[in-house]
Every structure is written in C-alpha cells, then in structure tokens.
Image 1 (cartoon, rainbow, N blue to C red):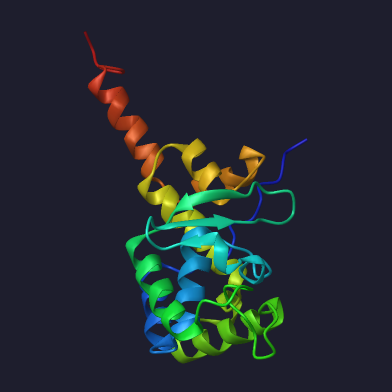
Image 2: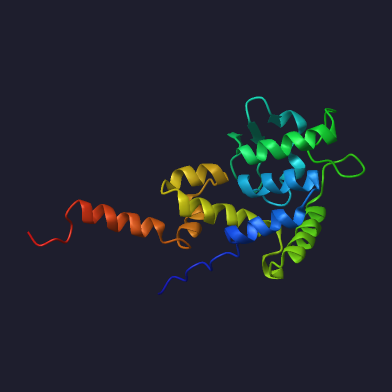
Length: 193
C-alpha cells in the first residue's frame, strides 16, 4: 500500500512576508504582534497567552507558551522583534497583563488576529488562501528549513514534540538535498577511482 504524502502547507514567500509587514505599516501593536507570530512560528491563539513578564527587553528574550502539546520555552528573539516589541511597550505601558491586550484589556483573541491577518494580506495583495495566521507559522518553518540544515534546531524553534511535524517543511526546500549531494561529492562518493 502506497503511503500518501502530506500536502505542502500554505505559506508566504519571504517577499510576501515583507509585503505583509509593509501593509501593517505604522500600527505599532500589529507590527510587534505579527513579528512575534512570524519569527516564533505561533498559532493564532498563542499571542493572547503572552504576558508582559514573558518579555525581557534588556536581554532580548521571550518566554513562549504553546498549545496542542507543543513545547513551551524561553527564546532569544530577533533584533527586529525586539525593536518592534520595545516600540509597542512604549505605547502599551508597563501594567501587568497580556502582552497584546484587546480593547477591553483582556488578551487579544484568535478571531481578532485572524481578522487583522486577513485585512493586512488583502492590502498586501496576498492570496486569500494564505491570509490566515497559520500560514505565518508555516512560513516560519519553511524559511528556517531553507536556511538551517539542523532539523532538530528547527524542531526546537517551532516547539514540535514530534519531529515528523517538522519534516513537512523539509519537503518544501531543496537546500538540504543540495548540501547532502555536495558533501557526498567532497567525500569522493560516486567518483571513478
């Protein structure tokens, strides 16, 4: 019996991610929130779980709580995330509570994040099939796999318990295949001796 391959998930190209952030423009909260969603590979419900005390700007670290049995952890964040989060904190203030509060002060909801993603994607000319936050999670995994050959590092970054969940991103990029072929060639594999 032939095993069916999992379909390749919808993801934004790096150029589409750049257009998305350009479409977000000067909305400080959305810039910070979507930077974190993209660079941390978060699900739509996870930004609402972030608390002010999870972010430590002085050392550029963020504790990320994950759902669906994924592994939570403390992560060094990118310079872009740190800059966006610092801007957001100047506007947000230092009151304890959700890092990304809604208008009523509670955590931002997954529905609001979906609504914002849809709006920004439309403004950026990104197809509706990619206009959901989970496409940003897939974008993170895909873009990491194009840069990093250590599948365990990608697994850790995305909080996957099962490495099979990480492997879907490897099928999208051929970088690993090319690097493997290069290493075989350097070792003399397949050469006539």
